[in-house]
Length: 218
Image (tube, rainbow, N blue to C red; front, side, top):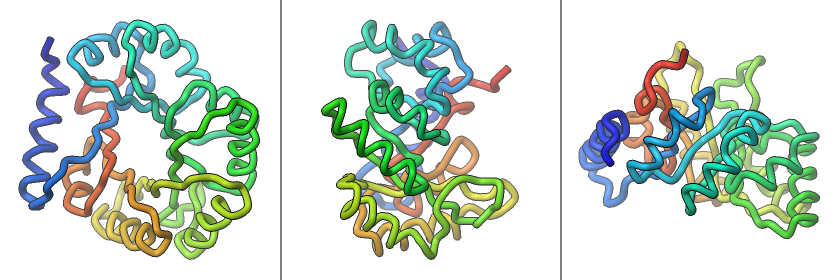
């Protein structure tokens, strides 16, 4: 069953990848935060299986049942994680994009050991060095990724960023790509509804698209 918002985004993704002369297309994460199960179900029925949520508690209220109904659904945490929610996050999510400090790295390592789950992890980078925004500052990224690996035994597969809303995202995506190379990670989680086409030109491997698929949140 087709879903118009999803189909339009997929077409734009394919066109952007072709324009950038890429041989691949990035993974599309449908950001379902603030939408209830009834709004998410049509997107699942259209074949989308990768979704992003911002809050552990909100996701707990809808995704356990949806995952039973739609086997193969993959859940990404793309919002900030508090250490007291690490146990719940490890139990529910498949991928976490917001590892951004030592305390979280330690909590995730502990919970993954307890639950016997190896998770895919991204380090969030505050590319604009904004005081109010989560994320590791660019100068600390390489060392932090190494500590996640050597001290906490975590497998960091990529970096994630959210550029400042009032700035051209291109330089931020370029910086994230540079830091990924320096950190020896392959994945780049960057680009949202307003700028994912730019992110694709800068080699994004994961794009996080919500409103362009689901419509404007109420």
